[in-house]
Length: 269
Image (cartoon, rainbow, N blue to C red; front, side):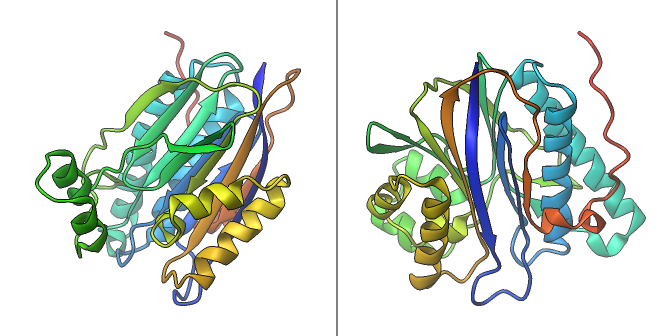
């Protein structure tokens, strides 16, 4: 059955005082959540969303991945609504979410915002996710050029986020993965400053852990002003394993999670 062999790293970066990114890497789930910069309690939003998604995945192995990811995004929103109600100072907190989940046969990608997912296959890098930003929408409509998009001061204005005010509308789609593929999920602290060619070269290193370290270091050396989170997963075909994993960034501290006890089990269809 399909699963991931993984490595991951998250760094506060050279400018920010604390890390608002969160992430998770395990044999069946990879995800990155980037607390929206400048908003109140971005680390609460990213950690809570990462916790809900990973807790669901760990508690319900084998559940159809599109359904589970949609349910997890909806429940993450509910958690953030409760978090704002408990502490009005959190009003405005929000996060992106990019997650890849497999049940061993089918794999789904969920996208909210502009954290990215890439696929390295046979040495060639392609982007699986599609930014949900104002600039990307203008680019898709042919109203601006690629160069104008790269230079736009509005390139980080997201059209979708997981927050405590608006019901998110995630794009969830099945993706075709095969053994030998390598996935990269990252926050924009990486994708903003590294070219696809640089990412392809570093992601192609034999060692997953070395690739993660080099990607983060390259982002910092290239002048990123944001937190940097990298999750790498190699797709393998192997017997089922227990779905443990590693937590990254703000998600390491459960104090950042609105209510770790409130993740409800999925109801049967």
